[in-house]
Length: 273
Ligand code: MG
Image (cartoon, rainbow, N blue to C red; front, side, top):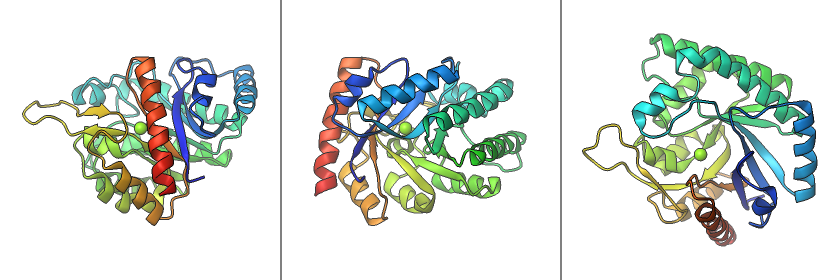
């Protein structure tokens, strides 16, 4: 299973096109507005089986999220914005139920910028939401994985200890630590390794200096500042079993699938090295 997989999205990506990348594993992103009926789950289950794709994670995203720059992320992403908390926690529980119908044992999302100050009211509110999702997921035998990078590894680790739930894990995305300027990804991986249950293989460059609030720029795998060969080597040293899920979030679908295909090839070479 130490082999490439792909992060792909319902309502955006054609399943045959995903399968044409030559992968057997994937992570399915669920857009915030997608109806999560039992019938939809049954259709997905059939389609995934016939495509020969096994999901390792179902990702939740939420309506109204904006990743344009850091202030937009702080204002709109995940569990942090107070006005959408109630709706988003309910949506996450629905995603957990949907994943259970697909037979997937891990759900994940970006929860937003966890406040560095554990005494901040937002910190306690987000902690309690994560506990609620964990407890619901546990009843399905699922882990709940937090995506890395929007805060330094140490802050994330402290938060996870405070949540104090055995099924709370990490989906490690090395590029996010660079894009958000929160830390060197290989060091962060070593810090968080015992909690890492899944990974994104994504690349990117650091934010340009002198532009407050700017994010770094995502790059095709192997063309950014992550050092993807070292990332894969470190995963292997840490005993991570895979899969290695290539993620590319650029708007143009032809460019995106071209980059995903090259990323899969690169990982195939590195995984066999
Ligand atoms: Mg990611």
